[in-house]
Image (cartoon, rainbow, N blue to C red; front, side, top):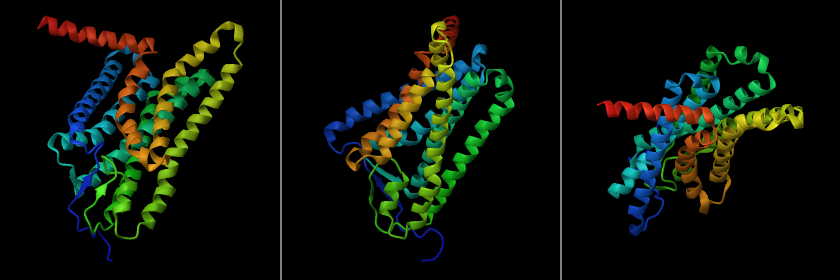
Length: 311
């Protein structure tokens, strides 16, 4: 087989959540609702951080970037599923599948990297408070996010280009409602050893290294908190600044581990949680327990209401 893309398949069939006709309208309404909540919730978080001066801090800057990444992740996967469900046509073109794979990997990995950066931010704030203004100055924050963006795009590009070199001789059904590496490799009729090697060599570290950085950050954070006198009430107050981030980390990595290491019978359900439910929950996890975010959202909504009343 010569180099380059040898695929003779022009499209793939995406596996839906359910193939039963009586479930289609229910699924369409449910996922449309989740997508709209994800879109509106994360946009409100982003706008509140952008417009509220008190939220112009490194922690909320990273949160704004996470909100945009969540919108991208949900839009990449859920929107196509909504179109397929509404039209009852569950196909995706070959080019469309590779494009979806690229953006899915980019935004999914970006979530992981940003959560690690946010854990580092909390570590510096709690364990090195005197150095916080220097270690997390605006230029450093922009550099960290830019590095996350470059690395995730590079990893996604590597996997996508390698996938484009494979042959898909017989049209088949992707065992997901979106194009992912594993289901596509199962459909290929060419040698996939290089792809599998890169999944292990590149894809594994992309998820495990940020996770280990988060774990290390929280070990140091907990150690610092335990040194605070128990009677002062400072322990709970200090750790409360990490509560929202820790909740998002648990939901994100819990669903990722479930999606990629669970039995195949649960794979679709786990992927739904990872790509649709988690991006929807993040705005609530960050706003319900965060007084500054609540105030920022309230000011944003009051401003929009006052504008609409004035018109």
